[in-house]
Image 1 (tube, one colour):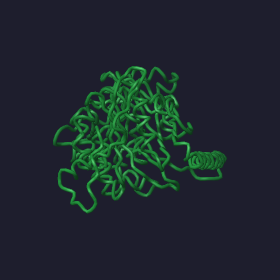
Image 2 (spheres, rainbow, N blue to C red):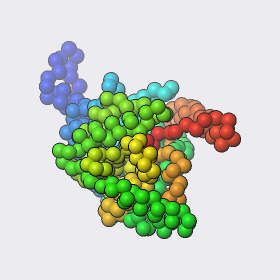
Image 3 (tube, rainbow, N blue to C red):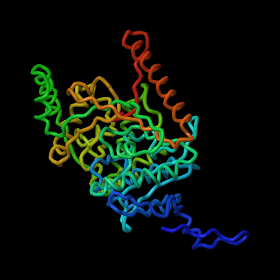
Length: 409
């Protein structure tokens, strides 16, 4: 798309010009010589226009096999409504023959140096770019080139990138300083029915787990999915149970806020309608005693948040086993390959012998910003060394355990 001409000095900018300004051209045309494919690249600054991109974004999301639920348009747009505030939106779009084939939603931040970061912040367990699988080889260089132009004054800081993510292609073809660092730990299981998960356990542990399942059956807990118009009320019940569950203990404070409730309700309602989220409720004698929200993409399902009545533990009900049994049943039948416990290395997750997967942090910069990139990498290394000291002190009994965010918190 050719850049719109600038208005003459002193001229009034009309409605049509204001609408055109919703897109800021980054490059009029990017040509990948290897295939001769031509791409147009734009950056959308206007939240209203970003909201209108939902259908087009959704088609691209379905065509990106490595996408996670946190790249879903409903999640990103809802997060922006709750948390965008006075931040500046930078949604980079790459099209081929008018078709959206690559995208990433970013915003500027200062922590403490100027950076461009993905939307979602600490509430997103994964970040990534979107690349249409069938055009990935050529769309990745086009997106990298557009990002290179966008990042004139800021380092691109992609946190919590899952191994194998599309963003790795951007890192591979980046022309300029770049770093690849370790980020948070995630724990993952294969998306198989419960019998398959039990088969992973040592005989004694599997036997004890079956006893817990019989205890749950004896209590008479029933499982149901909230659908359609039921979803907002179900999310409200989940958050109320989450608050009760963590009362008097360390909890992620943001999960108790009104803006988080608004974000989660909007996002999950929209995503459940498209089959990308599920709210499961557990009832006892007709009363909801636990609830769980699971977010999904094409290959992955992740347990994001749950709430449980403290009375369940008083009745010796193993809530983690209850949630996993319910989820493994339908996730295993959905065709997805991964059941992610998302971020966090909590001991209860290790009961099922999950695979440990370490997210990545990708830093990308133009040559002039190499000092900023190296400083960010040094700060990250320093924090990791400090975290290691805290972990060792905790393991030696000299420091209290701190529950980190991620997964079903």
